[in-house]
Amino acid sequence: MQAVRLLDPTRASFVGKLVEEGQAGRRARDVAMTVLGLLLNLGAFGGNLEGVRAASLAYFGKEPTRLSRRRQHCSSRSRARPSG
Image (cartoon, rainbow, N blue to C red):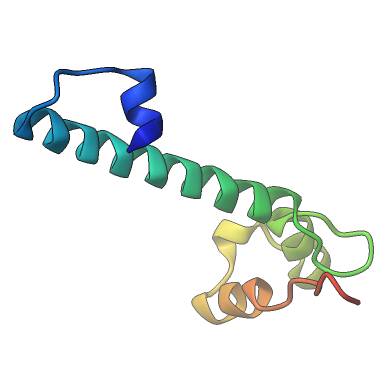
């Protein structure tokens, strides 16, 4: 909420606090979705595979949107671990 207050100062009131809280929640969701998108598109999936699409094509020969739920789950769990 402090970042929201600095970016968009409003009058200190109960309503102003509610507005700040709503804006902070939206910004937090935006950041979380950005990080998730980066992990899915750039994350290592074993060997030299980077991103969900590359892993899906290499492992299953299909676009990620064409995979069954079971294979989607399998590919999401196959991310390479940072330590090895």
